[in-house]
Structures are given as structure tokens and as C-alpha cells.
Amino acid sequence: GIQVEQSPPDLILQEGANSTLRCNFSDSVNNLQWFHQNPWGQLINLFYIPSGTKQNGRLSATTVATERYSLLYISSSQTTDSGVYFCAVGRGSNYKLTFGKGTLLTVNP
Amino acid sequence: SAVISQKPSRDICQRGTSLTIQCQVDSQVTMMFWYRQQPGQSLTLIATANQGSEATYESGFVIDKFPISRPNLTFSTLTVSNMSPEDSSIYLCSVDGGSTDTQYFGPGTRLTVL
Image 1: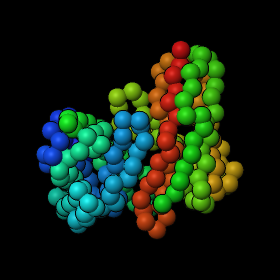
Image 2: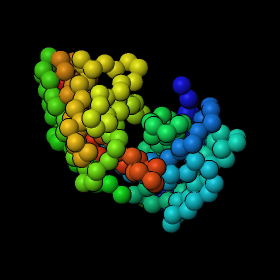
Image 3: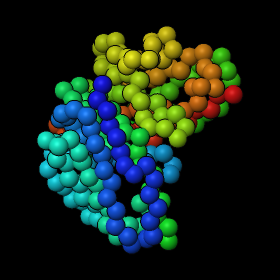
Image 4: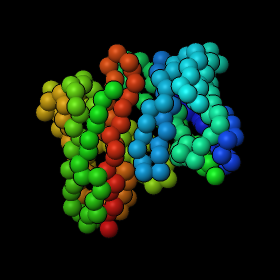
């Protein structure tokens, strides 16, 4: 099956700093999503981005499908950004997603 | 976006027993998915549940251990059978967002097996 690698595995920031999270995948995909899992376990969809660039407030994402990677940018980080960020990919029309191992982000005040 | 609820939110169970987890969506959806998240790990898809057909299980998961029902377009259940401590995990249901291709997740069920 398709492999998804995320980096870095852990990241510690001071409030106000910027960060870039990376997701590499091993095969062509037609579905790529970024999720944030908060400390209570809830998964929130951040972006559906199989290609191109999107922005939502302090967050933005870029996927370069031909080179099989996606980047998630977090600017002016806040303590509420803490949690695990997952990249998940899918192929075909069955909506099944394969998740990476995630990046654990800790934002300190 | 879809609003998803799960019951129970958490449970502590004894080895050898079974637990049924419910997933309710506020709108009709074609596909529902069940995932397992073991402690400190990523999410692994257990099965895909379509209304009116048998669930499709991923490699490593079998119907006898994780029977699934999908009686209508807004509801599904996952049963964890004959539990062992290795089944201690968060179990999450999700749905596809239809035309948006976004996937939405329920709040999860935290299961501890003693």
C-alpha cells in the first residue's frame, strides 16, 4: 500500500513562532487531507488539498502532487495549536485514507 | 460539514467481554468508516461500512472480532468482541463529505481493557 511519512515527528515552539510540517507519500494520490488532533483526541479537518495551495487564517497548505509531498504552514503559533497534525492520503474513489504517523506540536507560552 | 456523535465516549471493560460502539451522523451519508488509534499511534482503518451491504475489512481485521452494522444512512455500530488488553485504543468513526471529499470524524470512544 501507499506509504506516508511525516516530518518532523516532534516540534516544540514558542508562542508566535512559525513552522512548516512536511508530508511525503510514495505514490500518486487524488485525496490528501491535513488533520489536527487536539489534546482531547478530537480530529479536525484542516485542509482537503490533493494539489495546489490553500489558506485559512494562520494556516496554509501546499501540495506538489508531481513530487509527492505536501507542506502545512503554521504562522504566529498559539498554545491552542498544540496537538498532533496528521497527513492522510487516498487513491481511487473509495474515500479510504492512509494516515501518516503525525507531527506532535507543542507551543509554549 | 457533518456532525458526528459516538457512544460511549469512554469505557473500561474486562477481558473476554464485548463492547458495541455507536456512531450517529446528522445527515445521510453513503460511506462510514471505522478507525482504531492505539496509544501514541496513528489511525488505522478497520473497515468501510456502506448501507445495505456487508462491511469491507482491511487487512488484519476480521468480522468475527469487529462486527459492524449499518442499518441506515445515518447510523453504524462497531462491536469489539472477546476483548483483550491489546484492544485498548481510541475507536473513531468517520464519514465522507460527499462532494467536498473532506472526511469528518466523530469524537472517538476511548476503550480500556483490563
